Image 1 (cartoon, rainbow, N blue to C red):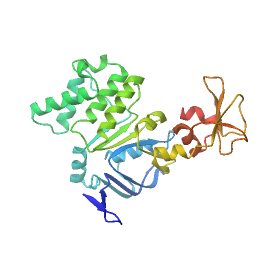
Image 2 (cartoon, one colour):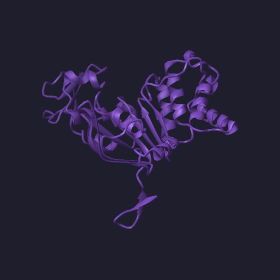
Image 3 (cartoon, helix red, strand yellow):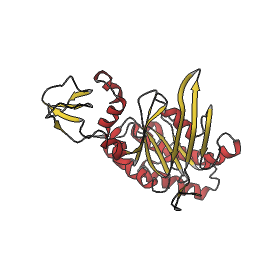
Image 4 (spheres, rainbow, N blue to C red):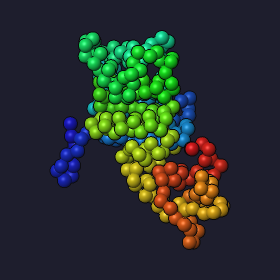
Length: 300
């Protein structure tokens, strides 16, 4: 399905359409009626703890329903049971905490998840389990019991089950937790390839992963969308607002001592003659949220 534009060309229909979608828990607002359209590609989701990221991901994964507003996923309404089942056949989900039954091997667990996803034919199911294990670099660990795997390897088992069936929508909550730098680079390669055809939503606190992988970034804060656009656009918004100095400048919004012994500052009004430096996504994110120095530990 595609949508005609004003110039007569067409663009793909959104994989996800949220209009005024809201969710509250015991009177506390988790999502404050957000509007969001998602298309194929890799989207980064940033925000502090309590911003509503996990609530949004669980809504996209059909684990939670919205209290208000409209939600359409893969052209279906998740509030309708039969349509929700169809959505679940076409999505992959990695929650922040994934429980593993005791005694399962990596292969056994993913095979079990494939059965739950209605891969009934043993031959094609075995081939698919082997494919996703290879995709995350665990072919040589297939017969290892999950309890004997490292934390990073268990996280990759979780990612493998989410990749079963080449989902059209892939929803990942902190997928790089426990991964070493080489594993994170490998994961980026996998997700970049998946994002060529599918919509991949990655919630993380690692701004460097978003900057290296994602085309688009959505920043949530207090259940509201602070920014939605290309990563390059958000980074560009910090240009001319990041500078280096030998001493900490109290006029900066945030400042910290780097490994070189110099101080990196971000602020809306650099001093005259400041030694400006190229901003990162983290700089732009901190500027967007207006995070003072004493809150830096929360976002790093």
